[in-house]
Length: 447
Image 1 (tube, rainbow, N blue to C red):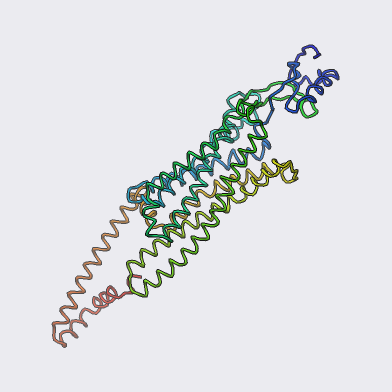
Image 2 (image 1 turned 90 degrees about the horizontal axis):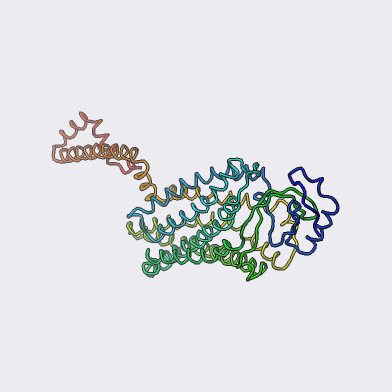
């Protein structure tokens, strides 16, 4: 049935005459997932050829240059956050969640980094003649299977953060038991296990081979050196349509749409709770209960910080949620949309992924700007020389201020005990000193 063997190579297209083409058309026409191997003269079933990159030039710039820079910044920011929040005096239910969020977000960027550095930064995308089988598996696990697991963990940890903070400010008496550090850690383990179980099937859907031949596919002959995927037992058992519908609907509903909806609701409730807490602080100030007012102010500052973090997380993830929802509906009900064809899906995912990575250093800036305890701990850990010099100068200044205060107190005591004429004489003789004392004792001097 098949023509005889030929001498095959990248420049052998003229060898495929009409008889080869007729056989190839017959092969492809009998099975959608089939291509004809012109060099081996056989009809291949059960393998799909795919490219390791869709649009090499823009992906090489984004993944090869922009992405490693963003990961480097995110690594510094999230490692610093995790280290600061791991300090004993910083361990609170809120800070425990923030630490685990930082670790999950860091892994979202670190897992794809080996592939992007090897394939795009080092320019191997332009050297397909060097393709080896491990390239296919590295791309699969570092870009497709594993990163969504850590992103799902980060998504639900953000929900946990917002819920924990809402309970803390709205039901403070119950929050100590319900939102303890132990319970937060248990919830984190549950989130991680469920995310792993839901993402694990994606690691067992396909096996891979390399293809280095002329193939007849999609109506044309082309020379291909690329990866080809075949269905594993799990995919054969469930069927491709059922498997991917279950996987992507679970991901879209359980890890994107549902947590996004909960975050919107919790964010609104947090803002309402902050407004009530602000009124409570003003009432405490009017009642001259300054210590309680100070504690309320610190609590409000923490809540505002978390609202900012959750809001940024929502802004960058809602477009992905909408895209994933549209994609699932279209694939399930076989709806054709022009927006899902062409370059848009690849460009959208590139831009969306980079925006998500860019927000991680922003979170670090929010911690530094809005949390004094975070700033102080960070300075003590990473700026020890600077902080020690600052503390030395502060101690010297405090000692001088204390000495001046003692002198001023002595002067006041002397002037109170001396006769009026001597007071006048002393005041005239030490006018500058008295002026300095009055500046020191003035409430405005501390501003």
